[in-house]
Image (cartoon, rainbow, N blue to C red; front, side, top):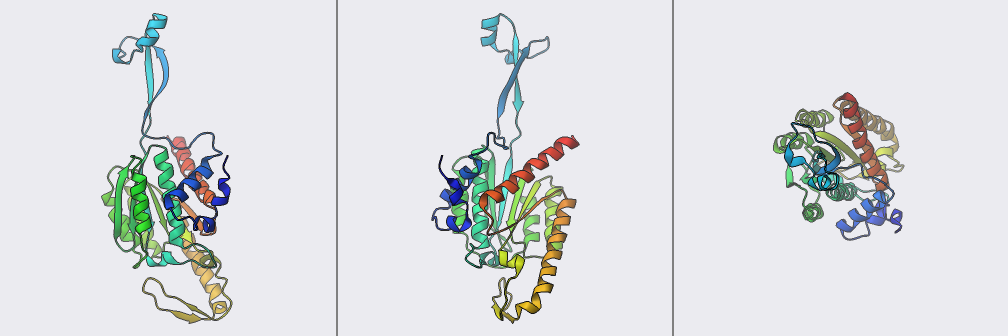
Length: 305
């Protein structure tokens, strides 16, 4: 069996030129040890036979079994629910940040988006893509056709980080644009007003979409390890700032903690899976978080039913 583990380091993946290859390596590396996939595609699958009783439709009789047994049996089927997925990837200017030799947030988010698209299509479900900053820059409608992966990856590879983020407006737009309810995966650093973000997410939930939020951050944005006088580059129209980081660190850490706590609390309230990941996280870990939240959501629904 190929050793996929070595490709799951984001910095190693960054050296591979083709995003489609990266996605395949990530997914095949992750699922190679799984005995059964947690996904189910659009399909109607045979479940079992049962003996015919008056009132059953004749068209469901299995005539081959009748020929062998001289008895009437009905073929029962289990109809699977089609999963329609929308992957929303933030391509605003702040996603271009990458520190300490790590990949940029956009590169990492692209790996996650491409891997999820590959995995969803592998399971014969439908996937669409939305790239956004303060507007929808590109939208690929959902499809389960294998060629959809190339279209999705082409759009991701063509993305150039620019402009400010306006996630709230984007989520309201997408909530009205998307038709049949499905799964919405938002991948962003969430550099926006947390109340506007949560309001937009609530709109998606109101439309009966299941939502998973990947909050992608650079490790330096979480730990703020700067020691010397530093010139901080402004992104998304913010100016440069020369400051002593030691004087800012305590307040910065508290602000980040408050922001993520409010975000997490709002997601829990609205039954949204929230996954915070940093760009030094191995990609199989990121996918494991995704699958864990997805499967736990199904268990919650089953228990409620």
